[in-house]
Image (cartoon, rainbow, N blue to C red):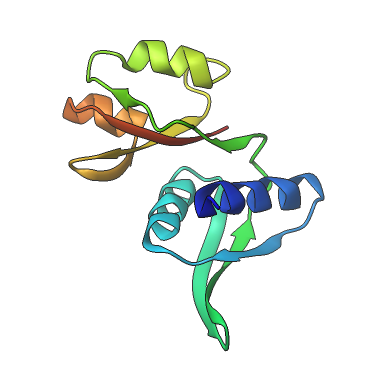
Length: 126
């Protein structure tokens, strides 16, 4: 079971249904992805909630997600390959964000280009 895919699917289906709140399973990777989505304006806020069965994250949606998917297999990308990867996964220039895992942490494709690093693809959102 892929918890990142499950979380992104939950976000997308709640957006399509017009709902403003949803709950996803908690993990450090999910929290870092939600930090990126918040900074990019795709979600309004989120908070971790502890219940009897474990941690969950309550997310407040902003209504801006059209597509959110994981990238499988998690392909490695070198620092010079970003334009090719962006055209493959994003609909147009400067629309959407690719989330990647690098030696600098979980960051966006734009941050990776600025830092001059490559990494492994995790997901994309637009």
